[in-house]
Every structure is written in C-alpha cells, then in structure tokens.
Image (cartoon, rainbow, N blue to C red; front, side, top):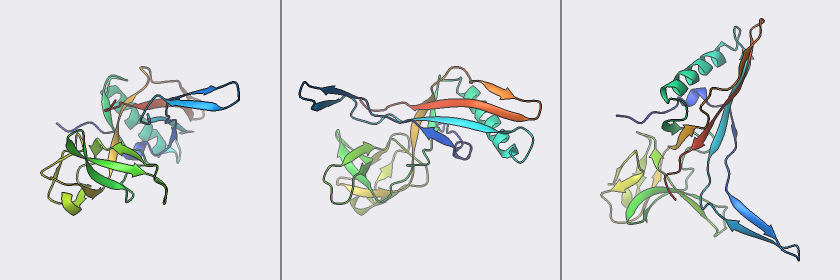
Length: 198
C-alpha cells in the first residue's frame, strides 16, 4: 500500500517554522557557549488560506476543501504522510549515495563552495519515479520508503526529488470564519516532521 502524500499543489503557500534546538549560555566575560542539542533540523510548516468563498479565489476554496478531507483521512494528528517542501525538495547537485550505519543510502549535503563544514542529511522519502542513480551506484535499487540503496558495494551519486515525513501538529482544524459577503479567513494548520533518526 502506497504511503499517503498530501497533494503538493494545495500546499504551495506556507510559512516555514523549521528549527534546530540549541542551548546558549553566556558566561561572566560575555562569551557565548552553545550546546547543539539536536543534531538535525526539525521541519515545521504552517498552511493558511485567506480569500473569497465565491470569486476568482475559488481555486483556494477547492484547495482548502481537499486539505480538510486529507486532514480527516489522517485522523487529525494521528497519522504520518509525505509532504513536499517546495523550498527544498530535490538534490540540487548535492546528492550522494554513501554508507551509513552499515547500509548504503541517499543523502544530501548542504555547504557553501570552498567551505569544509558540511551538513549532511539522510533522505528517507525519495519520490517514486524521480531517482536516478549514477556513478558506482548506477546498478543499485532504491527503497522509496526508506532511502536505502541495495545491490551496490561502493558509493555513488543520485539525482531526483524527495519528501519529508510529516504529521499534522493539531488535533483541531483551527478557526474558520466566513462573512456574509463571502470572505473567508482560516488561521491554518501546522505540519511537523516525524524524525526517522535520533
């Protein structure tokens, strides 16, 4: 059974509230010491719609209705689903296949040119039909539910797209107001990443 995926076309408009969790301490001399408590970023987004219920904004209304139906299908915040982060959803020339904890898997590097400080994330939810393995990984097989690559014995590279594994953050739908003139305002739903690594 395919993993549920929130239709990417209904959630192009969102506020990105993703974060790292760090504890900063300033000592008596004014110097700051930071303890990086989370090794990985936690993605969080807020989806909102504001428009007219009956007008040229009809597309937004249909998107809202589809999102509402999906929220019900997920039983509020009970179940996880795939989510396309429109600000970061493909390899961007930085996709590698490397050995992690004894298995080969897709990863993506984040760094600036000429900078040795690289932030590497595991890709757990590649998008079916978009992944192409290259180099020494060309004959490998991708598990699209885990990002693990089998059938290879040396590192390679990949190109393609990936999703995040998310859940709705709220149990309730949030406030929706509709005026007699047809204006509607909905304060939205938040989606939060379900981390698949520690």
